[in-house]
Amino acid sequence: MRTLARAYLRGLWDGKLVLGYTLLLSFSLLIIAPFLMILLRSVGKGWFGRLWFPPQLTLDWYRWAIEVGNIPEVMKNTLIIGVIAVAVSTVIGIFAGWAFGRRRMPGKEFLMAIVLLPRMIPPITYALGVAKIFYTLDLVDTYLGVALAHVSVCAPYAILVLATTFEALDERVLEAAGVCGANTLKRFFYVVLPLIMPGILASMIFSFTHSYNEFTLTLLTYGPHTVTLPVRTYLAVGDGYWEITSAMAVIMVLPSLLILAMIQRRAKPERLVGGFKGV
Amino acid sequence: MTSFWRTHSTGLVTLLLLLPALAGFFGLFFYPMLLTVILSFRPEGQIVGWTLQNYGTFLRDPDGQWVIALTFLLALGATALSVLLSVPLSLILRRKVRGHQFYRLMVLVPLVIPGLIGALGLLLFWGPRGWFNLFLLQFVPFVTRPVAVNYTPHGLIFFYVWLYFPYTCVTTLSALEALDPGIEEAGAVAGATPWQVLRHIVLPLITPGILAGSVLTFMAAFGAFSVPLIAGGNYRPLAVEIYKQISVPIPARWSAASAIAMIMGALQVAFLALYMRLVRRMGGAAAGGVR
Image (cartoon, chains in turn blue, green):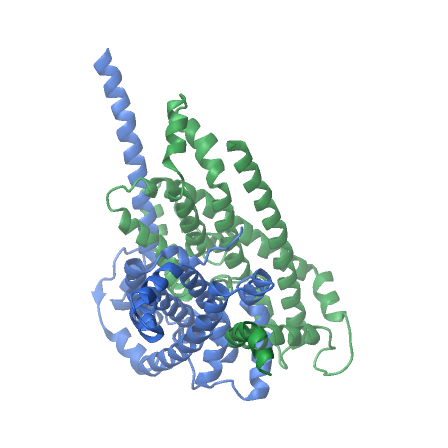
């Protein structure tokens, strides 16, 4: 009787485990399947009707994507714009993060809320105004213009990440270094910099991700010389060639996966969602 | 002068430190918003005069009301489904099951990939020739025709959930991991079954975390633009409607677009304020319940 009861409980426990793993596996499948379909579509040929896999493989679509879709040029644009956006947001983030994280000021909470406000409003609402201003300033279709538009999305994240980084910097460690005879310069290079470097790197990675993925503001400020990867994909979807679009998507998703690996290893993923303070 | 510098130097340095951020805020957010507000009150295509007509036409138009209702429907549906997916998922992932790092990575994938790529993959997967329908046709009886998912409202909700549930999931997971295991043990020692511990101790304690994450999911879903643009078909939420106003008609209808943008911003802010209040109240209630 006892063994029976034990077996029954055991079965229940195993059942729970099976249920849990089933949920996890189907969840992973749901996340991965769209990428697999893109990948297969990008190398498949003559994939019509009710077939699970393409009957023939080809690399033609990649050739088309690179030659007709002009992917190298588009990739160059995206990287240049991303680098400018990251540089500007990191500078803004370091200064403002230091002020928010380490200095006393009246109305800090209010100022912080003001600076972080762009994250609470859908980008399309201010993208209209940004586009209007950039048209009058002739910033549309320039690297600087598109990058500046991206800054409005990237900078709040940089400020948030860096403010928490600087806030966590322990005053006593600096004092200890001072007691041990390190002057201001040495203290900065040997103590402060190593401590804040992970935060700065995380902020740069997140800023770049946001710039790389940014679509709304780019769509309203881009021109023929500043087509970025998301805009190129959108245009390709409009053209209706799914195979070529998929090839572009594969090329485009690789850097994102690289960034994901970096985030997983180096930074706390919670920062990516930029949790609200005080909710 | 020196005395002025001495008394005000720290304040001035703080101001200088904040200057780039404030410049960016005013140049790239505040001034554009101001311009949009002004534009929304101008008669279409003119630079003088004031009118409320842009708001009136959109709000009185049944199509406009439908657009607003659809936006809320999609965002709220996606938020609710995200919570339903995230809570069990984070409860499992908390146990550090075998390969949990891989599954955690899976949670982050939709966050870092461009939304358009996600939408493209989802369109392929859920499409009439995608694996989802192939599976239904081959293994599920009585399904003889592909089920329509793409370009429907429920399809859009699925897509939103896929893309935006990580906000809820990551926040829920971190709330769960910040939980003191002693509290649960105390519940178990006091004779509560695991289910009771979950229902009366764990869930109330992580509710603020879940709600905070769901706010982020809601905001992302409410403001979603790229996904409904390519995967929405005839179902256009507010963001796409705004873009249509300046991209389809010639000449572009900037004033109408600005008015819709203002309506969208106001709705989002109003809803957020309401939601935050609810979150505060529920958070307080949860903490009080444990005390």
